[in-house]
Length: 210
Image 1 (cartoon, rainbow, N blue to C red):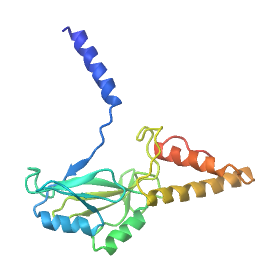
Image 2 (spheres, rainbow, N blue to C red):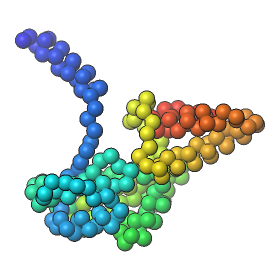
Image 3 (cartoon, rainbow, N blue to C red):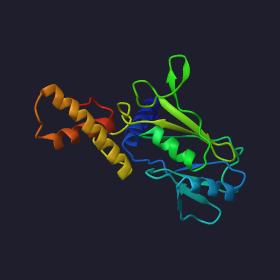
Image 4 (cartoon, rainbow, N blue to C red):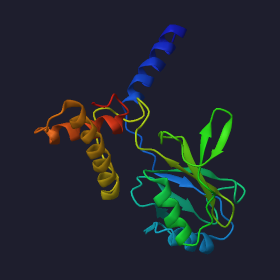
């Protein structure tokens, strides 16, 4: 096979893979004490799933991806993991974690010169964060995201991971629609269509209606 043929084959394979679903299912965490880790993550309200012997799987509420840990799952050093958890309201989430006995860092946002204390002044997605660690030192970064970056989510898909996410999206749409009616000076009888357009655009990271 010529070099041109090889390149053409690879290009075709890449195009096929670009439209082939590969859903991230599990992240393996390196822990030193499986029972202690299971107790910790269970205290966060994460669901304990059925698994084969020697594997513990827990899933955060609203997540399509789970975590695995077990005695022989990874050679990585316990505590060397770092993962991100997306939340729609970082203040509410931090308060709930703290009430459950988890030590969470103060909320901070990413400024031009690095981390700055407090919420992002414009409450922009991806900018506001907080961190906590499990008993082994694996770090979890809480990241507040309400509007995805363009291209991050398929524009043809609109899905919400939980009723809480859906309710939060509806509240944001309601607030934005209120501003829309103020600008137009009249009641919008087609508000369900406006809500739907706004919520779909927010999920996909495309231009929001005004």
